[in-house]
Image 1 (cartoon, rainbow, N blue to C red):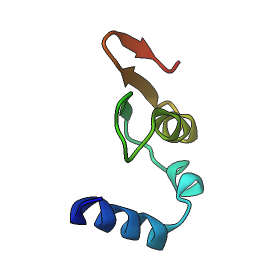
Image 2 (cartoon, rainbow, N blue to C red):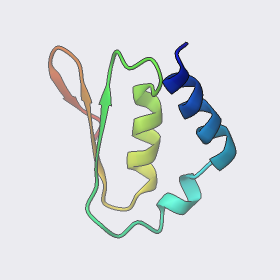
Image 3 (cartoon, rainbow, N blue to C red):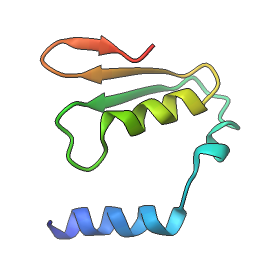
Image 4 (cartoon, rainbow, N blue to C red):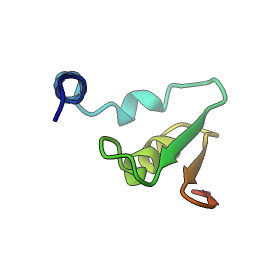
Length: 68
């Protein structure tokens, strides 16, 4: 794990679970997840897309696949 990955994990641990706060987002949002992302798995991206009212999500692999 490099220093960038460690830093991202440390910040995530400090912030805690933000899903409830995402319900207050009022801007249009497209959440994009990448199937081979080692830090943020697509199921977490899907959680964010589901938590934000009206948001949509996409998972990118070798072919495009929508969450919803």
